[in-house]
Amino acid sequence: MKSRFVKGFGSRIAVKEADDPMLAVINLIDIFLVFIVAVLISFLSAMGLGEILSGESEVTVVAESSDGEMTIITKKANRLEATKITRTEAEGRGVRLGVAYRLEDGSMVYLPDDGN
Image (cartoon, rainbow, N blue to C red):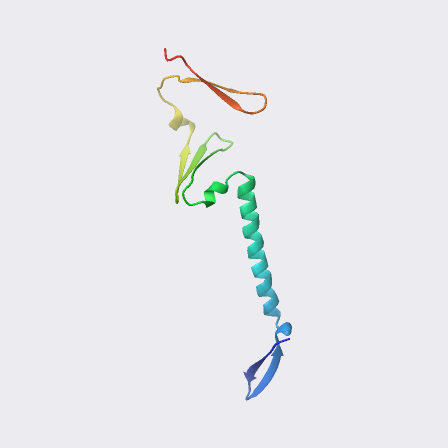
């Protein structure tokens, strides 16, 4: 064990590092920080969002709340943009482009109209 000397009241007192309780707390903080970063990286990779960490990738995430409000988060290079869309903003006039079907396995198929 290493010893260090502490000056106090004109005399030198030897203090062993193993007796210092703050060293154990500092080591625990380091361990927890490494654990939190590892959990964050594994969560992002499990969700298929590992591209968020790369510098030049483009990622779009769409989330819908229970009240029908949608949030579109877009990452281009190092810039993040969040856009909220409500049902009133999505209403308006337009042209039908086709039909989308959700299959039994959860995948979606889009069939465009003939252009008539």
